[in-house]
Structure formats: structure tokens, C-alpha cells
Length: 439
Image (cartoon, rainbow, N blue to C red; front, side, top):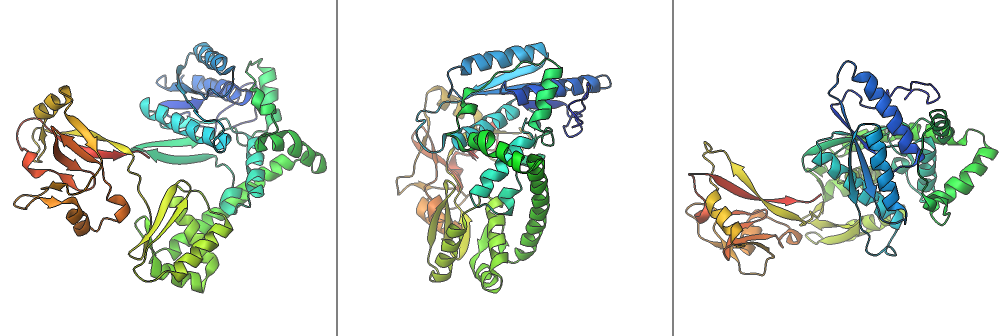
């Protein structure tokens, strides 16, 4: 972004050429400034292309008493700028459980991504600025993070959810808080204040209100220097990832790691093995482990007997060693859907009429595996127990508690196994049941 002190700022880092642009609006100073600059940039772009749409998304956490007023403020602001508006309400039943800051942040991102998917928005703008970057780096430093954590927040980051690709952009990341305040004052913008931002009980607020001002007195320009260090570390992380991909050529098998060559790398070059392990966790969208946890994993892997299994809990998921393969357990959380098949398709499916009738009568249900269930999934083969089918396919033990689909008390489909062959037809309108795993 060009200097915010200019009367007509331009969004060089933001995707103003996109057909739809999403923007996260809390109602605070930062996001209000972002909205103003984006709308001016889009207004200028629309002189050549009037098809660009701006969608404003607000997340109502319900953690503060004036949250309803903030929602109303954001909705009115969207109307003022003549942009689309939508919101999500989050509910935290137990605010005393865990780190409420981290939980709220994770839920907020999930809600924003869901809104983008719903409205077919592929580019989402966030209002993080240079001071936020400095706070993030200091927090990571206090946690003892490595290069990945100290790289801070990237200017842009792509992510995918249920087949929908979204890019997160932070066009204000090179602008300081002081520049945003000057811009807001110059353009007479109005915003809301979150009283929780004054509470130094939260670590980020303590850094913002106490530590960073003192650092600025000790070292003028500390905020911009921290941001510059983050950028340099991000470049170093790119090189580390490149090295990990080279080391992983004979170790990485899909999303999994082969134990024997992994241990050989650890014995020859422990630093390279640690780098590969962190790279693998990142591929699986998992957080970085502490050095102590990583060391305990290496001890487990080096002492485990052949054909033995291990299980670790990390970042809310289970990591397993099974048949000398290290893998992250897939979540069974999801839902059954019925995917329609083209009429001209030769693929077999369930009769749409039969499925509709069962839906109307409430005869479709999902069940958990109890044991001894049988299903025939191929022509001219006998019905087999799920236990036999899982053994034949080499399904790991933790994935054998698969969701089952019943229609009229008959087992129709098993997630990861298949559909009951005797119930399939090749004529008429047809659907095929699929189990969709939630990210």
C-alpha cells in the first residue's frame, strides 16, 4: 500500500483486480481505515471495470457487552460505503476453558473462511499492521519459537477448505499504527473501541501497552526493525523448506513419513531431521512443537521395536506410528451427502426416487460401527464383515471406527470402504453417497 498520508491511497498489495473482495471488519480503527482505502481503490478501478464487488464480514464473538452495538456499527458502515455485508455469531459456552484469545482467533478465522466460501469470495483482506507484526514476533520469541514462528505474519497466504481456495491478504502490514491514526484523523473516520484492548492481563495487550513503548524509547524504530527482521526470517524459512523437500525425497510418502530413512537422517544430521519434522507438521497444518517435545519424539522413535506402534497427541490431533509409517490421524467428523450422477453416466448409483422417499419418511441415519456388520461392495463377491474389509485394505486401526450410512435399517455405505452393491442401479436418476470430512 502506498503511504496512508496521501489523500488518495492505492492498494498495491491488495487484489483490487479480483471480481469479489472480502474484508474482515471489526469496527476498530485498523479495519475501518482498511475499508476506506479499499473502497476508494475499488472505486477508482471500477471506472474501467464496474463488476468488482466488496463484501464486508463481521464476526460477533459475544465476549463483550457492547458486541451487539459493534455489529450494528459495522452494518451501518457497510451501507454507507455501498458494499455487501454479512456476519457470523460465535458462542463460547465456557470462557474459562483454555486460552480464550487463541480459541476466539481460531474460531474467527474459520467463520471468515466459511463466509468467503458461502459468497464465493477468493480474496480476503485483513487489517493487521506493522505494530501487530511486532507484537506477534515478540510473542513468538517469548514462546521460544524457531524461524517459522519468528517469521511473523505473511503479506499473503493461500489456504483451501472443502475445495474452495482462499488467499488472505494483509495490505497494511508495512504501515505503522501511527500512520493509520493519522489517516483516520485526516479523513475524519469513526470507529469503535474494544475495552478489552486495555486489559494488560492478556499478553498481547501487555506487549502493546507496556513493553513496546519502552522498547521504542530504548531503540527508536524498534517496531519497523522487528518487522524487517520478520521479513528476513521469512526468507530464511523459504530456504529451510527447500532443504526439507530435498531431504524428504526418500522419506516423505504422500502425507506420511517412512520411519527407517527418517531415523537414518536423524543419526547423520539431527538439525536436518528436525527441520524435516517441522516441515512435515506444517504440511499437515499443525503447529510447531517445542524443542523438548521434539526431543521426546525422537527418543520414542529410536527406542520403538519393529512393527510396534506409537501414539502422540499434538495440536488437538493424534499422530501415529503404524507399520513403520508416521502419519496424522484423519478426523471422522463430517457428514454424508448424496452426489447426483449425470443421466448419461454409466456409473452405478442409488435410485434418487428411493433416497427421496426414505428422506421424507425419516429412514436415513448415520450410525457408528458396533461390530459384526457386513456389506457387499463388489459384483460376484460375498458379503464381508467390516473387520475383514479393513484388514484387506490395510486401514489403520484408528480409522476403522468409520461412519456408517443406513437407509430403512439396511447398511448402505461405509466411509472409506464403499457402497452396498445390491442397492446400486444403472438406470434413471441416481445419486452416490459420499462422506465429507470437516477440515
